[in-house]
Figure 1 (cartoon, rainbow, N blue to C red):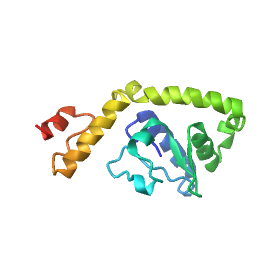
Figure 2 (figure 1 turned 45 degrees about the vertical axis):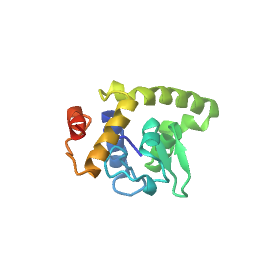
Figure 3 (figure 1 turned 90 degrees about the horizontal axis):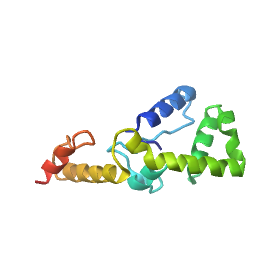
Figure 4 (figure 1 turned 30 degrees about the horizontal axis):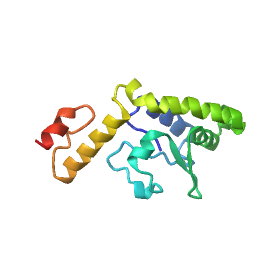
Length: 149
């Protein structure tokens, strides 16, 4: 699962898709899509998914953090890139670094805080359910407010 509104995340997903070359070893789900369905993704709510990267193993187990990258890269034949993740101390350090990034990625990519992103999504979903404007978006915050005036 990845944040399709994060340009850095999309770049990495595009790289992994190219490496997968249509073999279907990865099912990359865009959590930022309005079509994201938690029930089709082990019940992982949008807010939870946005807090850190999640992966769902073929057996249904949910993994998070750097282990997701390690498994994804291994699936496309690049397991050596994240081989360090097999060492518990290195994995723990990498997860701390990733968590630091994950908390700040939205602000770094110009999208505001996680709280703002979650609120705008809530407003957009409410507007769509009420038959309101689809223009309510992260780029057009005023449309969100106007829907409920």
